[in-house]
Image 1 (cartoon, rainbow, N blue to C red):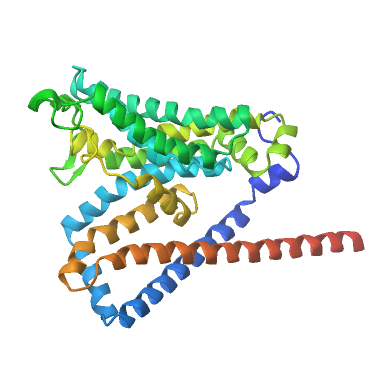
Image 2: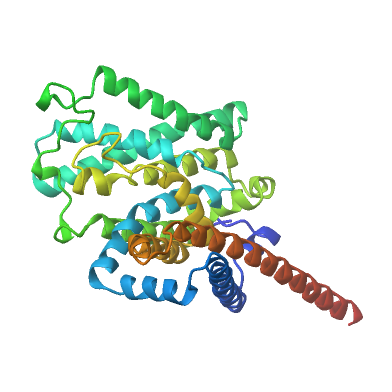
Length: 376
């Protein structure tokens, strides 16, 4: 107990041997690649059934996506997905389904843009304060669901979905009464533009800003905290079996609140690429939506693992960046959304089947070892 890790079966399950972990990772990667191959085959059949040449469509995607500009666009499109999926994955590790990322990042974007527009600070410090405000606002909105869960046992799926709608209503009310750009008589429905000191520096001018680097750093921190720290072990233990974790002195209620706050804080960064680098403000038409639900998809595809999340987000960003070229090639760009959906479905189904098969093999191996020990 001195290292904060529960002993006994729970500790053994959550800290498998290196060989077992490598074998599990290899099986997961292989099953995910097989699932993607199956998904592409299914999409090819759908394209052929509608009279389109799947080889031409896939060639267009690869040729277009391989260009330098499209690769930058891929990374730009992947950035908010990485934040959103990481926020979802934090909750999943605690066995919490944070469906409220959408409302959390929209509320956080409004508060951060409004606060940032009234500050006068040196460059990077100004940006850092805006990001910090966004994280605090996202965590504050997520805390409502956390309190409801631990105090009234309200399921987080219900509370976070309802909070998405409440967030949109609160944002509309704030715009109508308080937050409005006065530069054109208040007709422009967005916050006051941020001063230039609040602009996130570009990695490639006009193509990709440094929020992509922030996203990668966030994922790295997620990996260290969840997989390499005492807190992360307690988090995963509570999510795996709250009752067993409690016997080891872990307060599952406290971990629930912390996990939801961390999830909301990361969710608060989802729209910051737009607020600090593209729109330079927050408004209904200036900040992209639906990243919250897309993040759930990316987290599932990435198996809630940091590396998997980055790869899945880049894959989705790659497909999205090529959709316009498909339209020019007389291929419906909606095939990209169909492809993403089929990829997720096949990955989830095949990985679930693989996990069940691995569990059966593990149980059989354990029975054989027990039988061998009894015979001796």
